[in-house]
Image (cartoon, rainbow, N blue to C red; front, side, top):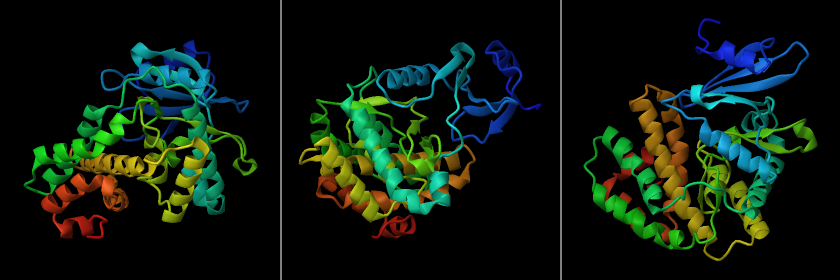
Length: 328
């Protein structure tokens, strides 16, 4: 294979896997590349290349070690060379939750129940040694919407007012983050692996967690139930939200905070998907914006998002919002 990254053969050999067949795996929206190593015996492993300076595998290794040490199902690390961007891990197989549910839609509720229960277990652990998901981070992420979406549509907006609206809406939530949890930040059906035979209701493996922070327990629940890449019905979302709240003993403000983080995350994703299309030449992400925007509009309808909702009413034309999935 002529398109293999430089240094791959040497790293694989040093890890004792030079007898394996190398199978490239389709990439994501980053500079990371993945390969499956498969031996004639059927044994397999996953190879990640996260090359500096664009990527750094150290956060992945740190979070994987922390998750495993606290009883969560992260892939075991077989070999590593962070300086060159190489990590060889346990292979969780090919049963990604999203793909499995495409083939077996009747298993949807059970799969989401297990995913919610995984979050409950994660949130029972002490918060990891990661950076805080603070107000500055929330607002910086939300600013991706005016920076990319609004600019792409030629909108003349009140950018300062946008940041101030988010600070006002998120202030009560940030004050309640006095008992934070580990936030994986990209916890959804494409990043949950169904281990063993999914029909037996086996464990769920975690991947793509290298950007973990310490923040609010509602964030990953929003990521799961307001999935940018897969439709989750309002009835299923409501049932899983109720399941989490009952199991975790969530307080009276939880639903409001869930809406706050839903709006914040979805605003960020609209900006990121627009950036992927505009800057990186990946227009396929534009097709996902209507799903994300519709979820954002539902979140904005919550009274807790009043300042942000009023900003949207003043700055983004109703016709544009409707065209991108809103109901205005």
